[in-house]
Image 1: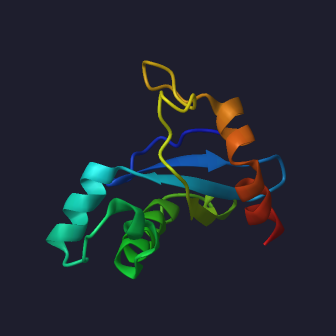
Image 2: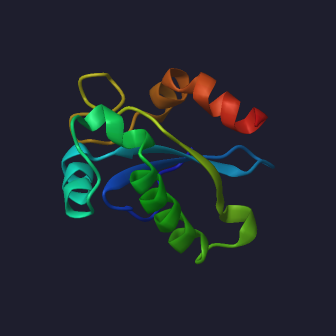
Length: 119
């Protein structure tokens, strides 16, 4: 698992790849940024929990991933992604300096990661 050398606003990505397998993304939305994007782009906002499945947000993420993939070799490109809850200091997935605790993230999202590889 690695953190990619880019930040796709208004969300953050965590890339997970195993040897000889495709790279998949765990995406966590930056709630403040995504709410601002939604309001600016006419996406109805009644609560932040609704945005992760909204077609306008999915289109945004797809577009950003396509931009990044255009700069990568085929074997490096992101094949699938899943939106997951925010990683935070409080839930133990990030340090006080906001470094990711990769082993905890893998453990926490193991079922989601496994499902992406099985699909």
